[in-house]
Length: 238
Length: 222
Ligand SMILES: [Zn+2]
Image (cartoon, rainbow over all chains, first blue to last red):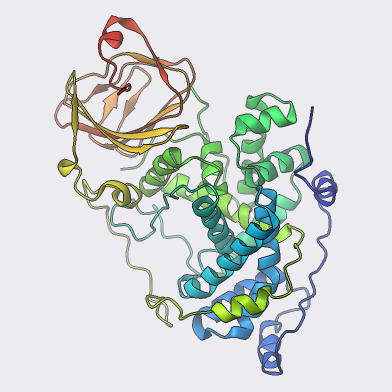
């Protein structure tokens, strides 16, 4: 018996229709006229400038200026999405709202650590929301990699360290995710929106665990291929 | 020093998604410290998470949500990065013998100072994460000594932190992860020379095999 109640009807359509056009989010002006100048600056790119890229520039600007107007625009875009994310993972409405607010407070406090050369705003904020959920809802610690750890084995070659390359990488990943075959998009979405092992995804979908794993690997290989990385010869479990 | 044996890819994805339990997440975070290739994969998986977040339909917030948050905006973090970003430091070789940061956060920097509990067969252990769904323990195996043969009812992953061991499937050095799935049987033997330090995560009780295993099973500390 399949249970798709955790996927909204909207997303069921979305998953079944790769290559859909994501509705353009209209950013509403909040606050006074002091916003105008900044908004113009942020929107100075082409008219096709996607919202996620604008958000990354806003967050980078926030890191420098600590300007409330920048924060408000980030809040209006991300807080409602973080709330949806937490609702998907089982939080009730009040908790999801409280934690979404908390996550955005962390965004404000930690903005100085955001590095657009390393991640987009969406990825950086996703990690904050994810870790907050593990801490508050699952009451577990989140062991986190420290990129400045003296024990870290460095990358063999210095990765290109400019924001343009990082932005391009994130755009490529977004496009690759949007065009995954439906059955791969489904297991990827469940991996992120279900706090369950892959074995439970297998039970839910009524397909063998091996199929879940191979779909996940195929999906990640497609994303890597889009980035110009080859597939990884990952071993199967012995 | 580059790892040859890696955790299964879907575990890296689960780590990025935040659905992995704490013990396995600790092992993955330590492996990512030691393995640039998996670090890259985990970074890509995290970016998938960011992209999925942005695709979500926005939920409606309560009327006062923004005002409430604006009212709580405190000072920004004092250790924020400098306004002018410095060129990244030339990669330094990792400090030998230093435990990965995620593990240091649990047990401190000095593994020798831990309250090691001696087990038969030249084996010592320290519990690190003890939860019902999974456990992480540090093991120190004396040079040349073997862990009694055991099999697994669930998944066992062993990350080598120092020294090395062989188990009939391969030889594992620092950064390598030996994965034993359901029903696998192995008998790890530490390299001669230095003790082998490793972090082992078990996600289900083990079954014992062989008389030796029944006499003393290091993985059961009931
Ligand atoms: Zn690896």
